[in-house]
Structure formats: C-alpha cells, structure tokens
Image (cartoon, rainbow, N blue to C red):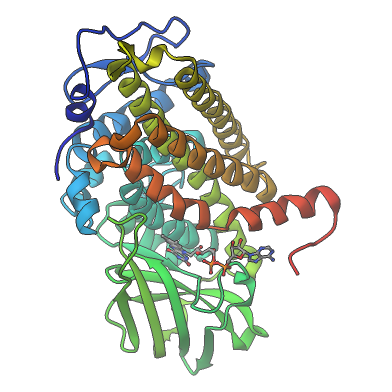
Length: 425
Ligand SMILES: Cc1cc2nc3c(=O)[nH]c(=O)nc-3n(C[C@H](O)[C@H](O)[C@H](O)COP(=O)(O)OP(=O)(O)OC[C@H]3O[C@@H](n4cnc5c(N)ncnc54)[C@H](O)[C@@H]3O)c2cc1C
C-alpha cells in the first residue's frame, strides 16, 4: 500500500477541470509529489513575521518533509515501524536541540524550533514525535534540569544524534496526576536504586539514555529526574503493541527493578515536580506547533482533492458545503499559526507562562483534530485510504490530543489561572 496523495487525487474524476486560482491566498505555494503546486496556507502572511533565518529553517525542513518523509512514510506507518533510514538524514539537518544555546546545539529561536515541529508533523507526526521526544523532552530535561557536567556530557552527543534520549514520566497507574508518580529512587552510598514502572515511553526501548522521573526518598519524596543508561541491569523495556495512532513511533512499557545508577546521574537542578513542569511547558509549545502541521497537511490535501474530484458535473470545490469546510479549516489554521508565532515570540523573550502553553496545546490539538475529521469527510470514501494522507494524520492526532497533558488537564490549568480556583481534585 505504498503510494502518494497525487496518485489518489488525480484518479477520481480528474477530468479536464482546471484547478481554481484562489485569489486571497498568499503567493507562496507548495509542490506536491507530482510537481503540482497548490497554495500553502498562510492567509495572514505570518511568513512576513518571520526572520530570514526562521524562514530558511522552515523551508529547509519543509523541503525535507516533502522529499524524504512523505514519499516513504505510509508503509512504515502501516507496519508500525519507524523509518530509521531518516535518522542520518535528520542528523545532517543539524536541528536537534533546537533552541538550546551552547553545547553544540543550534541555538535557534523558539519560533524557528516551532516551525521545525510544524513542518516535520506536516510530513508525519510519528517522525516528528520521535525527534520531539529526543530533542524536546530528553534534551530539554537535561538542559533545564541538569548540572553543567551533565549538559556538557550529554547535549553535544545528543545534538549530533550519536546518543538517543527518552523521557519517562507516565506510569501504568499515574497519567494526568503526574506529580504523584510512584517510582522511587533510594540513595545507597554512591548510587541511587530505582524501582517502579513507566508506560507509554516513546523510544524507551531503543534510547541510549532515558530521563526517569522518580520520588527522591532522600529529598522528602520530591520528584526528580534520573539518567538511566541503556543496558543498566534491572531496566526492562517492552514495545507496546496494538497502537492505532502514531504507529511509526515505538512506545514502551518499562519496569525498573533495583536499577542502580551512580549518584552523578541525578539531574543536578531538578528540585521538585515544578522543574518537570518547566520541561513540559516548553514541549507543549512544540506539540501545539506540531498539531498545526498535521492540520496544514489535511487542509492542503483536502483543497487539492476538492479541486479535482468531480461530482454532478463539476469539481466539488464549486459547492457551498465543500467551501464551508475549506474555509473553516483555513480560518482555524490561521488562528493556530498566529498562536504559535506569538507564543514562540513570548518563549524567546523568556515570558511564556505554563498557562499560555496550555492554551496553545489545547486549542491547536482540538482544532487540528476537527480539521482532520473535516478533511476526511470532504474526501468521501477516499478519505479513509492511507494513500490519501488524511486518515494517517487523523489517527495520529488522537495521541497528540492526549499526550503531554490531555485537553481536560490543559483546561484545568488554564481554569485555575483565570479563577484562582484549583479544580483538579
Ligand atoms: C502515543 C503516546 C506517547 C506518549 N509518550 C510519552 C512519553 O514519551 N513519556 C511519558 O512520560 N509519557 C508519554 N505519554 C503519556 C501521556 O502523557 C499520557 O497519556 C497523558 O498525560 C494522559 O495520561 P493517561 O493516558 O494516563 O490518562 P488519564 O490520566 O488516566 O486520564 C483519563 C481521562 O480522564 C481525564 N482526567 C484525568 N484527570 C482528570 C481531572 N482531574 N478532571 C477531569 N478529567 C480528568 C483525562 O483528561 C482523560 O480524558 C504518551 C502517551 C501517548 C498516547
């Protein structure tokens, strides 16, 4: 079941109908796999708000997704297998570690880093999440919560993708209530002994280093991060099966049984769960940007399809109900783009709050999910074929909607900040 969107969108009743020339889109256009061009959604000219460096990074990653991800991803997704052939190619892009300054990381702006998430996700969300786990969650934890020695040791190697990282917070019995994880770390001489279990851990089965969040018994049971290296006795990871979202990304169930690590592996600057929260605030911005990419992919595919698919003697794009869907999609995407740009700018100025990140995560994942459903609907029966791209994004958005804090949790975070009332429990 390999193939491309272009094969499918040119099949059904392509006829002689010429694609309309939208008068209000910006002039910038995307090229699909058979060289057709169609408008890239940028209705409010957000491009003009970007610096030349940000535009260059966006264009580089967009071209990468068009050339390297989209043509190959479908069979990998179907087989639930990650396209490892992409790893050396992403390494060449030099984008891992994104906005981290120093430590051989790119040190780009958060806006540029967000654009990377958007463009990668427009290609495929499993691929984007794979690198997001490594670059955002794992490297971000070490950068924000590690001491100088830990940063110097790990970050350059991880930026070069010589070492792959994972992030282990969620547990079989603790998801949204992450401040109350049960995994423990007990000090024993020059070592910590870790016991517990983790679930849903992206790359947990292959990572060279996993940031395990556990209760530090020596520090009153407060949550801290611990670096567990691949091969450490007592660390067992099992690939989760039967996942119908983000299929190309491997998630692991992990058990930690008397896992001994040197005391130096406790993240030096992780004091309590608020530090874990700082990592999640940054990555929720990335998730919001990623969801925008999924939404753009669905809109672009739906628009291209609507201009070619003919029913009742003309392209379906000529019917009001179809236009309404396309207009709704574009309006939401425009709002999502502005949210991402503004939040990224605040991030770069050191002003982004957790609640602002929650608004973007909540809004963009909710809207992207709705856009994917509309795009699938617009394609009729063809909408459920993997070759037509949309169903993959729609399935993937189910995970993205839930991970890094569900919609309900983001709502409670925002609700607490505007009312002063905590409504979690
Ligand atoms: C594909 C995928 C990849 C992931 N990758 C990672 C990873 O790499 N590392 C990691 O640590 N974790 C990872 N996660 C875990 C993810 O962060 C959790 O799934 C998420 O935080 C939600 O937790 P949960 O699934 O246990 O749901 P639960 O917390 O059990 O929630 C179930 C439902 O109850 C609702 N709910 C919970 N509490 C409340 C409340 N107080 N009020 C109202 N409603 C509430 C939730 O919103 C949800 O609808 C991943 C998850 C997925 C699906």
